[in-house]
Image 1 (spheres, rainbow, N blue to C red):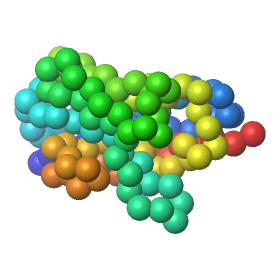
Image 2 (cartoon, helix red, strand yellow):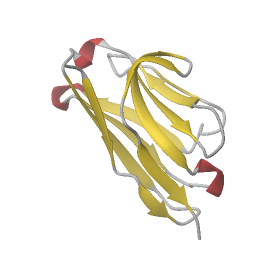
Image 3 (cartoon, rainbow, N blue to C red):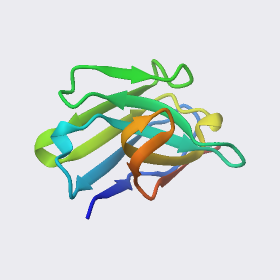
Image 4 (tube, rainbow, N blue to C red):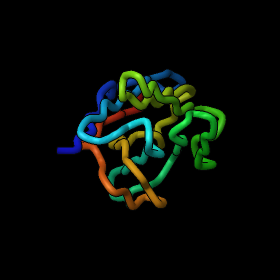
Length: 118
């Protein structure tokens, strides 16, 4: 069946960087628009970025624009999120998703915890 597995989360100090990965299986990864979402404690799931199947078009939420970069390697069925200049308010569980409309996705991974704290 279809599976999305995130990795790369952890604890980082404010101003630091992390790179998340999401390995996809069970569907033709290169044919689908992929996204990253996050859910902070006590808040709803928030869409933060999407990238088209051909890697040529990426969009970002204002909250992460200029700090986060989404990318993908279709040969390795892997989606990435490079997170720089992290802030305490970036603390959340981060999810990758397929065919998302806002925060509503056809499928979503189990999530990776990112904690930004000094």
